Image (cartoon, rainbow, N blue to C red; front, top):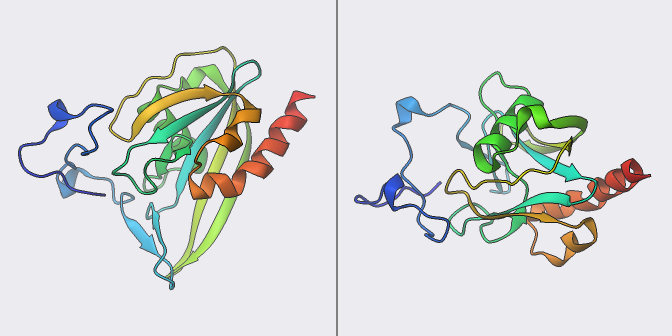
Length: 184
């Protein structure tokens, strides 16, 4: 994650500002907020893995997040999510991140499924879990941190037209098939 130059703080942040807010001091950060690396040099965010939520509403489609330019794969569309905390399971981490980043209500969704992607990294494996949830009622998402420049409900047939985050793009065909099956 990029550190902000001195003089920039949360009060300077806005969804249009490409500079992220400063990180909290290291002793206040969770140990999960770190990169892990594959032998190839590919890096993945989340020392304990990462997770995100694909929020689906039968009438409004799926909730997508337009990632801030400064973030990893910035400028692409994906789902709210991030690093899991030490000892946190994937569903809890995904729901926490979705609430923190987009205001997804914990009590307003039902978990339908978990899709796990496993990648080999130095000293083990790294996982990304997409937790698919159905929203009971439509809600207005809210940008609550510097990681998003937009949050939008997108019709399932229009998702492929977006510049998707590479990981989400790779998973989207399987996720879409799952949602199509749920719609029947």
